[in-house]
Image 1 (cartoon, rainbow, N blue to C red):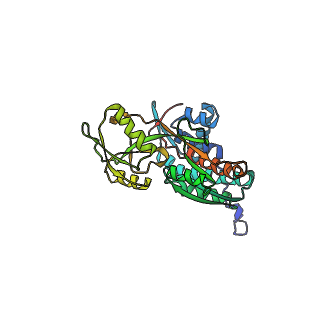
Image 2: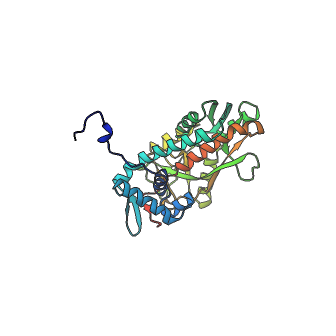
Image 3: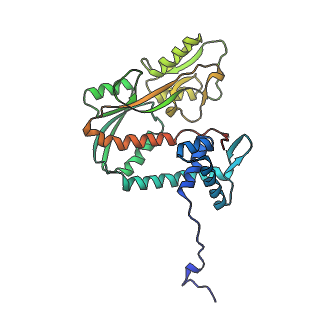
Length: 309
């Protein structure tokens, strides 16, 4: 019997469908740094996560993790799969939200601290706008004190900014570590003053960094001051000195420093949303939830990955 174009189904091979759960397990293992941490995030057992990864590898016929007795790392095929997996998970989650979440409709004037999601905020807002096309968001990015003042005068409806210890205002939505950062080639002086790039005072990152240096007796000198986080990031990339920023605003192409480099611990910064009312909470909740989920997905993986299962 001959095969003709009249029956294309006769020559079309059926491809297997990728399981979203398996892809989510794969991405989570890479992001969390191991099977145990991934299982905790997913609410699954470690063995269940391992089975998901094994089935994914069997279906693709490729190894996605290179396992040793002490660590694991993404294989070349695993790195290739990561890009596809993230896109598929984004599309899956976008589809589910679009049909299950109540449609948010209205206008929201939102202030966001400049250092919070500095490089990622436009991308996050673009994705959110696709899910909630009838919610119009007017975003103002600026320094904390300016945004809170604008909230108090009625120029803004909501503000996402830091919340200081003991402050009862606002609702906490995210906590992240502060980081020392520097250009890859910057040599940290062992004895001389530490060159410091910073936002102008008052600034929580400037204050926390200089206070921590003072407590350890480390000398310092401010070599660059900028009114914007982008300016501080540019100064660090240029190798002018070190800076303190939140994890979500650490730019690509710099290195994180710590106690192994002779620099003190900095602690965390708490982000909160200010100005919520019964009226605007209905508009704010979908956006805040989406931002927090996006932040969790951006947590950097730790290469090589620690083997935990």
